[in-house]
Image (cartoon, rainbow, N blue to C red; front, top):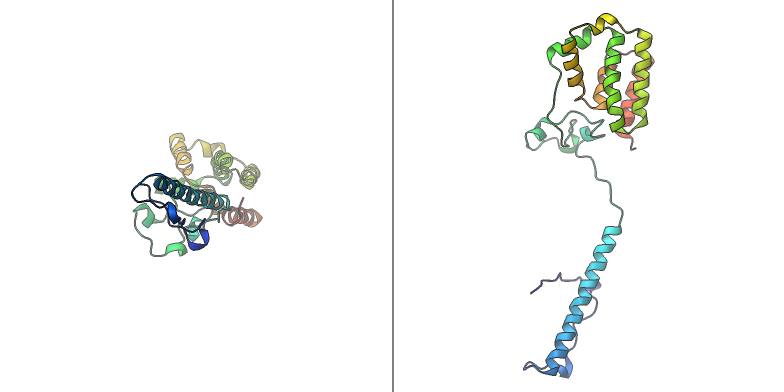
Length: 217
């Protein structure tokens, strides 16, 4: 026997049908009339339920709040994943956590030698590498402002001058460095570039990162 949802009083299609003189527990024509009446009543309740469900489906979805402050801009502009989330544990900071509570692939970090290489690279070479990796992410990000950041970094690299000697530094290590950098999201790459940028360039990178994190598309 099917189990039907009990309607609220204001949602009932009609009161339970009155049986009157046709009620015949022993069977016969009266019993047939009762069955038809009850079936019609149940079908009416089903129609009301379906109509109510359809009206709920047509209502606009309310945007969900971010899982945490650090989750803003996920996946291109969020912070690093929260260590508690990666261990499937509960974060005591909840929504106030400064790290991302969304799902992430396994985090890949730069090792000590790679960080030292970035620090030692000539300024122009450094910016060229960052802009190259950022350009590969621009199409995926689908935000015009990311392309603007790529253009800015490329122009700054040209002004600073690209050193041939910089690209001759251990080609295999440089390739591994770019591969690791590709695991960073857009805002992390901008923050990395900003460590060595100064003046108006630094200010513009900070503004772009803020727009990616806090402004909707």
